[in-house]
Amino acid sequence: MPTLPALPSFARLQAAARRLPAFRLPPLVGRVVARLPQQPPTLALTLALNLALDRILPRADLAPLTGRRLRLRVTDAGLTLDFGLTERGFRTLPATGRPDLTLSATVRDYLALALREEDADTLFFSRRLVMEGDTELGLLVKNTLDAVDWDALAATWSPAAVLARLPRPGPFRRSVGT
Image 1 (cartoon, rainbow, N blue to C red):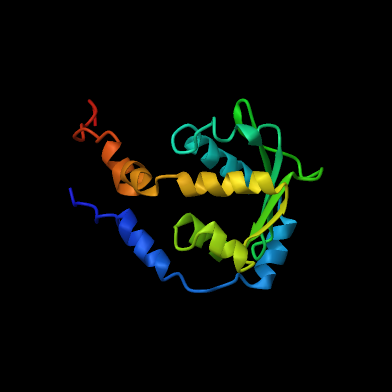
Image 2: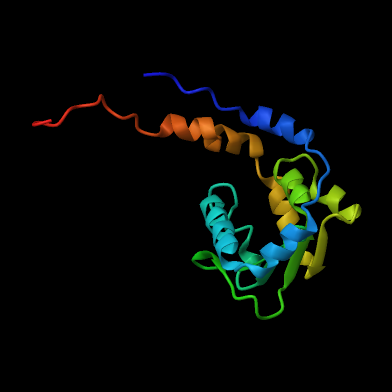
């Protein structure tokens, strides 16, 4: 059986992110995506947050978010994701109502933040990350992201680490009668 090529390490992905070019999605993309249902990407976001909850995002630290409405806007992609934290985890919320905190940035800036190319303070003070609403909630979110041990997370949840934990299939066996 041929071997699969090695997946890039998290450090290599981070190094590539440091070379992340400045870009904005074309306005047409934003206009088209803004007309699409926002629920599927919001569901994907809440699923990812729930996977991180209690693993890398301590629930106790996030307690002040419970019952609050959060909105994540991806300005150039035309996405507006409304969600909140409940006792049972993160949940999607309808787009009606005023959010307690809105974070707005471009796809590139969210990627730079997630890949640790830039920190939230740099993006905020250069006006590339906009926080509107309850500033205490904004500081809580920023401080929680800053406290995450991304290197430890990479060691456990990098694609290579996840694939290494998957069960290996047994040898191919032919069924009787074939």
